[in-house]
Image (cartoon, rainbow, N blue to C red):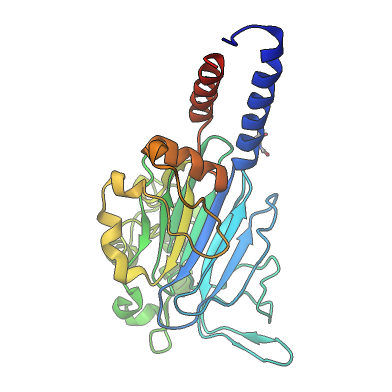
Length: 315
Ligand SMILES: *[C@@H]1O[C@H](CO)[C@@H](O)[C@H](O)[C@H]1NC(C)=O
């Protein structure tokens, strides 16, 4: 037995230290961007003021391609897709038909999307809940959804599966339907922009235009003061952001059990391989998944520590 003799304490102390270190490194979120469109998308990433970059601000994502990024805790920013880009192979310079960030390059270097663009917005917590939403407040350019994986809480999928470009009213349509502008951008009136006398949730109401956006994409922000159904929360999750998710649109209707399944091992994300059969319970899987990526609560590491301690004490 090894419960309290002095030499045991160093073992316990080391274990607790190791687990604390794992937890510290585990906070944050992994974003995995997946392109299910049958065309190339050039995602843009803009970190909000005070948030560090994710290692890229713009890149090319071929059809079926994916790429992952690790966001630190407290990270906030937005992710969108640029379409119809044309970058000169020699000078690397060029522009995009939609979502262009004005950098004249593949990288956006701290510049945001010029509207109209579908925007995935995130505020990652620090051991607290993350907030995320899909915003059509600056218009729409392509279908996009956010799927949380492995978190706790409500953790709903959100976004817009529908191709709103097909349903865009003529007065909001960009060219032959490559994007759909917001009513605010087209008409510049306080009613549509929720500015001036309309700068509050009580005065800024849905418009015929925001209603079209809302009915096509019920979970997305259709105007600045859209209701609470548009903001989603989850704690300790990783997120996939999928462009043109239509082939998997059933996903948004799945139950919470399915939502707890780990994301596919893709991109730069590394995951633990085989888990020994004897520990192949959801609880242990979660723990080991947590070791390789993140997503695991202090509570489970505390329980794990306890089990190790009890185990050691029985030696
Ligand atoms: C995250 O933000 C909260 C609130 O501002 C702060 O207390 C905390 O120290 C931050 N955490 C990290 C890891 O930066």
